[in-house]
Amino acid sequence: MKKAVFPGSFDPITLGHVDIISRSLPLFDEIVIAIGINAKKKYMFSIDERKRFIQNAFFAEQKITVETYTGLTVDYCKTINADFILRGLRNPADFEFEKAIAQTNRKLSGIETVFLLTSAETSFISSSIVRDVIKNGGDASILLPKSVSDFLIKK
Ligand code: ADP
Image 1 (tube, protein in one colour):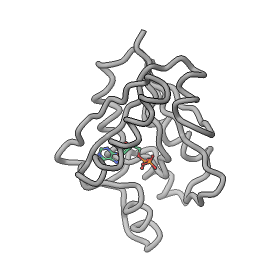
Image 2: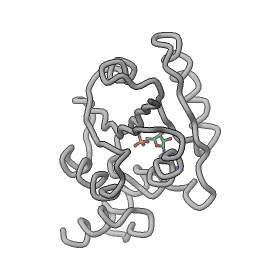
Image 3: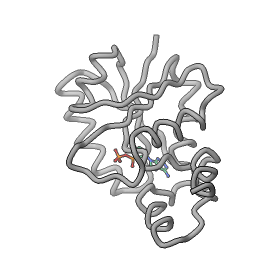
Image 4: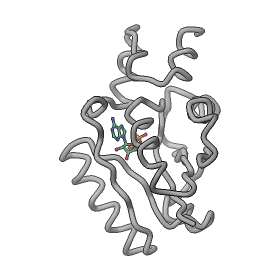
């Protein structure tokens, strides 16, 4: 069984993440979307909100589960018997950053990181820019799945 972990902050999940997750579905039997919790980081959305946004975006998809974790991603992968880490690449900066982490993770644990190249339509989307738009009262809905934009409208 091919089980992958897609780790991230997902603060919030964007259409960029949705694109990577949707395109990875044919590659794996199970995908655990894992929200990494770093006590020192400040987030815009609570863990429960971020989890709910992802669950609602993929509620019909049997292969997907949403979890939270702390500590090293490779340790979490071992705990749940996942052999693959899934990541998205948008640009050279992502590549340089991800390369060192993926090589370290493989050295530490043997776990392979599978990279999917961002789609042209979503390559510019990042959670940090989405947060900036929201903070400044802009409408970020075209960058977000309905589960997030509906929440923002109601707020
Ligand atoms: P992290 O804080 O670990 O980077 P993110 O939630 O920002 O967490 O991102 C999780 C993963 O999703 C990363 O691999 C990131 O490169 C990928 N990602 C984010 N936005 C996009 C996008 N627009 N296209 C492709 N991949 C993306």
